[in-house]
Length: 262
Image (tube, rainbow, N blue to C red):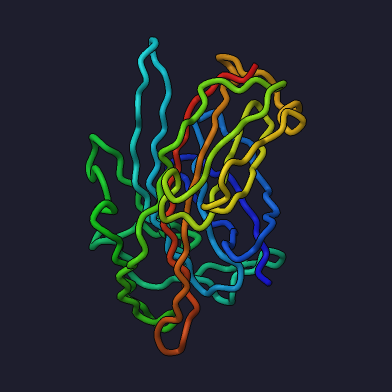
């Protein structure tokens, strides 16, 4: 059975990490949030030859008492020289030009692909509200791919707390109404150097994070801000090309909010 791993990565510097909707219990390995800003989860699946991720994120903070939203869409992709391993060394390979919704991703020196669009800038979005189509030019390392991802975008419509009191439990409801189209949901709390990730089914119903799991967090402050993230996602597994490659196509929603931890 595939194993799960999870890492938090800074905005505009997203990397490929490991999760799997088929595993009941994740083994998260969060990295402390850099001082540059909040984090957005990215997902990859152990055992696949390539991962293609469409991430829609809203980061809400309060400035002068006014809530401010920063909306971004990121296309993230990676192809591997061998099936991705959560325990071994993984080498990303050049797969040629990679596009999502006809927008080319930027390829880094490690052969990781990413493109982030921010509302109010150019591009303002990657067109995820209308769907997600991946095109891979391919080369000697990887076959060409033309994939229309038919899975619907997940979302979270429930309440996100503004304050976390370490002596009180946190309660959320995940169901077809509050987390539509989600296979799984991650709840992430970050305060100071402490991070915790909780994994739930997208239809788990009412879930509670007990106070005993919150007591290790430090109180937030202006110099040590805290964030909470609600991250529903789904995954589509498809074998592509000749020679065949096992690919995963992921749609993820990240709702990130500044919170007060006391």
